[in-house]
Length: 251
Image (cartoon, rainbow, N blue to C red; front, side, top):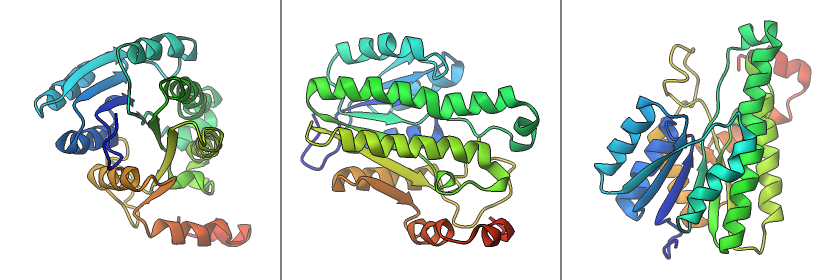
């Protein structure tokens, strides 16, 4: 069960090698969390992540999970929930893709969309139903400011995050009064392996800063969290900028 501050004893990470997810897990283990499930494709990286969290004092188990195989989600996640209540599900998987390449290779673009949106819809609904059945818990969805308004430089990724964001908000509304809380997290540019080599962006953040914002959001039972917080104002302005003006902005 979550403690009086909204922090979980048990955590299920969908996307078990995500740097943001692992930073969040480390932070929660230092507070309250004692049981962690890392769900992801079997790999040395997944096992290494599990070993790292075990060294911090948590009981950690891994489970084979593939965002691109929605037919397996109910079975795979059902086995996790059958082991005991899960206080927090952190939906953290996603791919950035390569915009220039993916525009020329539609099947690659579809893979980005299927991972970031279709896979998340499936896993999100399965997790939400399980949380609702146990009568409590939280679902934290890692979205992105890229979903606020699609940019020429990454509109394939941005459109997939826009769909995810809208889905998560609607799911949160649908779960009102059930004991299940949904929180959408919208980071800006996060310095991770996935973004290595990309041009530096203003207001860039780190996995640790996102993790701190997730913890604060859980304590406050926030519905939407921006990282850094000033992006709320920045994106409000960009969202309403005329299209002709937006095209010329260096964003």
